[in-house]
Image (cartoon, rainbow, N blue to C red; front, side, top):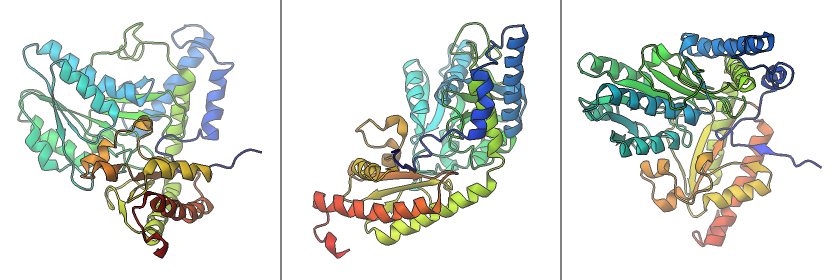
Length: 401
């Protein structure tokens, strides 16, 4: 008998939409041509790939020539940062490039910045306030004469905080009128695509990262929007596919899946409203039934599907394990660092202690979440926290609650 699964980990990955799978199937079976081949099967694959590129560009409201398909959002982030810095260094060999980012970025950005620092770049890691927001004034103050790139994620994967990307874009546009080197603006929009306005002109970005598997598409496919005349060097070399920026035979089925998935996002506005209702119900339910709990991130500037709590006296990983025994999937934070015992850098940046960071639980909701599943979670979670607190001895009078 198959185990019934209740899924509250949509920020880690999403199930493949049935319509997306249907769109992909021909390119996994019969339409298997290489899009670089000039025969019928090759041109069939090329046509499908370009149709998907158009769907992505329509969603972002940009030219299809500005979409580069990658093997993941991590690769897209790497291409944006390394590609831009390397291009600058070629043109300005005596000037060290300066990059501005935040302390709560995904590791795909932070680890890339560490590599850039080893290669001679200067990097400023901006602090955030207690809600996880970056003050615009701090970005303004961090800009130097050699600043060439600002990379700020649109919405955080752990705490759901939404950054004022359009406001940052306007600041940088104003600054660029005064500076010798243009400051390019990149945002990792992986968590934002499902819920937020991603019109690239409204945001004022030059580069934008997205991922297939966060929007009910397949894993192993991402994309980078690159505004025309943005200088980038490739980081993968070969046959020159991807307009010379991403060599390698394209993952046609994955690209088709990404196109089909992003097309579905347009039709999910009603579902997004339901998701926010479930989020609010869970947040209110937990705050009502569990004492000594802290909501991490912003109440107002928050993704409609994200909840992140710290439960004093209850270890987050233990909560996840006991929830799993009840058939409920959740996480303590980023899936990319789930096996690490190091406390979340995002929660530490909010001002939480290491001990508090280890008591965190992230619940993320999706379009398949039901009211019955929400009720089950609210029934089970308070009991689990109570049990763990009793074991830890953190709350000796726990029976009174």
